[in-house]
Length: 439
Image 1 (cartoon, rainbow, N blue to C red):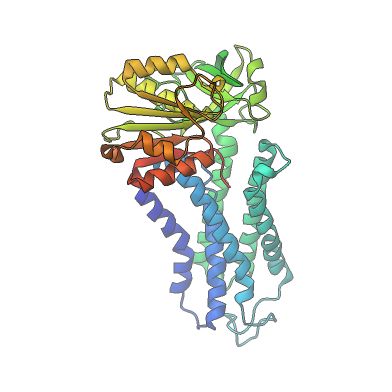
Image 2: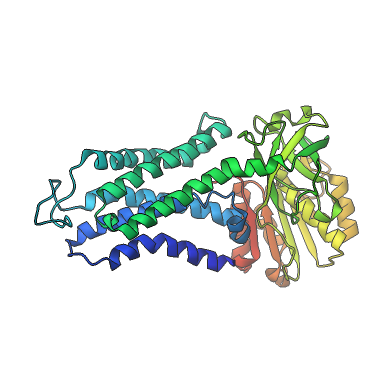
C-alpha cells in the first residue's frame, strides 16, 4: 500500500466513530454538548490508533519512514491529550439521574460513579503519560523500564477509556458504534501482543550468532553476526534493526542500530555501535558465539529504486553506519551516479573506517568531505560543525537540487541541514532522514 493510501486509511478509521455518531438519528442537543461528545470520540479513536503507530510495524514505517511515523505518533498523542482535557469542560447539561422523558440524555449527563470514575482516572493519567513520553531522555529509568511502563500505561488508559465510553457515552450506546469501539480495542491489544510476544516467538526460530566484535574508532565498535540455521535477513542498504544480544528474545533489552553492511555482501550483518548507554558500554566485552536476535529490517533510509541523478549522504558521528551500507551497495551494484559523503565528527579519532571510506571513495567515485569541530593543526578538511555554510559550499551546484539527500546523525545537525537544503531549493520529497530520538 502506498504512503498516501495508508494516510487516507488511517484518517478514515480515526473519523469512523464520529461518522457513525453523526449518522445516528437522535434529538439534537446544545452545540457545546455535541462538541464535547465529538472531542471524546475523536480522542479515543486516536488513542486506539496510536498502538499501530508504535514504529515497529514494517508495513507502516517502511512505507512512510520511521521519522514520519514517530512524528505522526507524537503529534496525534498530543492532539488526543488536548481533546481529552477539553472534553468534560464543554458539557452544559447537568449531572443528574436519567429522566423518564429523556431516554437519550439530551438534558442530563450520567451520574454513575463507576462510568465516570474510569473516565476521570484516564483523564488524570493521560497527561502524566504524555509528559513522561516527552521527557523520556530526562527520565531516571533505563530505556527498557520506560518502554515497559509506556506499553502497560497505554493499555491501562485505553481500557479505562473503553469502559467509560461504553457505559457513559451517549452515542456509544448504539450497538454498531459500541461494536466498532470493541473491535478497535481488540486490534490495539492484538498489536501490543504481536510486538511483545508473537514477534519474539518468530525470532526464536531465526537466531543469530555473534562472529566478531572489533574497535573501529574512539569508543566505536563493529559487531558482526551471522544467521544460525536460516537464510538471514532480507534488507536494503540504509535500513536498521532492533538488536538483542545475549538475552532471550522476550527480553526488553534490545536497541535499534543501523546496518552498515551491504545486502549483496553476504548473509552476515554488521552494525556500527558507539558507547553511549548501558548495553553499548559493554559492547567490547561481547564474545564470539553469543546468541543474538533481530527484529527488522525497519526504516526507509534507502536509495535503491530511486531515480535521482545523484546521491548526497550527510552523516554525523555514528550516523555513518547506514551510509557505509549504502556506499558499499552502490559499489557492488556498479551504480555510477555522482555521490557525495559529508561526514562530521568532533575529533579525528572518531572517524569510523577512514581507510574503508577512502577505498570506497576511490572504487565507487564518491566525493568524501570530512568536518571536524576540534581538528588537529595539520587538518586540511572543513573545520567546525556541519552547518549551513558548509552545506551551501559542498552542494552549491544547481544540478544538485534534484539529488536524493540522505541524513543521519545528531538531531541538531539534521535540523540545520534540512532547513538549509530546503532554503537552497532542494524539494522536501528529496530529503530522507532518520532519528532514533524524538521529543
